[in-house]
Length: 235
Image (cartoon, rainbow, N blue to C red; front, side, top):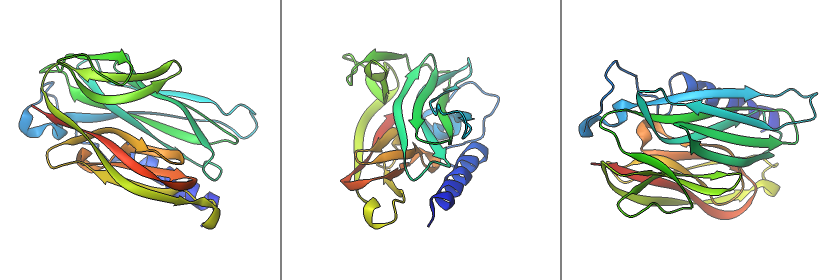
């Protein structure tokens, strides 16, 4: 499959996610959520950007923001029209009730960024801390990397447990025409995938699957690694 065909496929995936696909429950008028219907109370907010072939500067910074009556719980991204798999994700992180992704490439491309937003009440008591660990009494909802290093979005309330799910992935770019490959990992029943990624290759997409039951990636390169997800059980 050509690089152009892969680019068209990924652009189509962005459109599906933005319009009606992965992890896009219908928003209702209520600003509250309940334990029995957490996924129905999550809305995916999105933002996108692209650059032109003639700019010579292919850096993009895109932020998707939750509404004032919502609370950020995670985020992801999906890029399209990338030459082969040359997308460099320099940062992907939570800040100010929003999810920001900073990228670069060697040619023009488009990217969509997603913020996963839970209705505001009851409050999770979220806060963002530097590093990969939450303070005592808090649980990690999702993790990010900023220009300064790792950060974690932590919740003080209404999270029963978190776990890391993994699935193997082997990339073979030098043998498959330098085409990216897809992978996914599912969370245990009742847990929601709020962030994740791949330990190998350059990621073109990284976002929650349908009903937040899994984490999906498209990544390119060579070598063996894992697709992983941070799985959260609410209480």
